[in-house]
Amino acid sequence: MADQSAKERPIVTVRGLVPDEQGRLLFIYEKGPNLWVPPGGRLEHGEEMYEAIEREVYEETGYKTKVDKFAFVYDQVLGSIDWHVVQMYFLMQPVLSSELNEEWEDLDTEYDYGVRRLKFMSLEDIKNEEWVEPQFISDFMMGNLGDSYIPYIKTAQEHEDVIFKKRAQA
Image 1 (cartoon, rainbow, N blue to C red):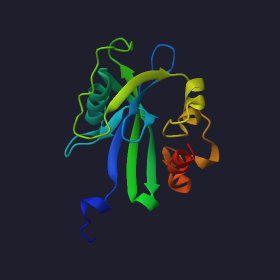
Image 2 (image 1 turned 90 degrees about the vertical axis):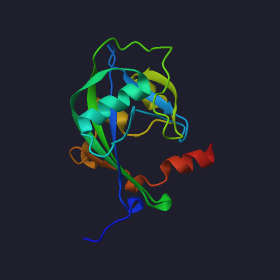
Image 3 (image 1 turned 45 degrees about the vertical axis):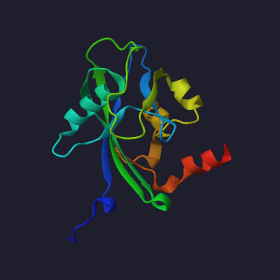
């Protein structure tokens, strides 16, 4: 196998699906892409996925959580912008209260994205929010992924540039 440069390799990330007592999921609003996404980020070299997701959720939200179980993989390939990210999603359980901490600040300052806001969203909120990623998260919550969902894998290649087209129209 030929040696690949870092640019040619997919970025591997983890994201946490953190519920509150009402069954809503925690989302963060990232500055860079201006999207609501579940908290998470890149694995560090040598870090196990379970360690990474617990660290990332804490850094981005201030919540101490533990992995409940693996949920799915989201393979996002956007060829027009040379972007390939493999996102591992985990269902998380809060260790303490799931009330939002008004004093919280994003601890992960390595990337420009940063977190602007946190909020818990119900299934209805997610369906009505225009800038939620991944777009099929409401289907996952309802157990409604159908034939387009290969067990534990969802690909974005067939939806290339959906977000960018929506932004151009906005």
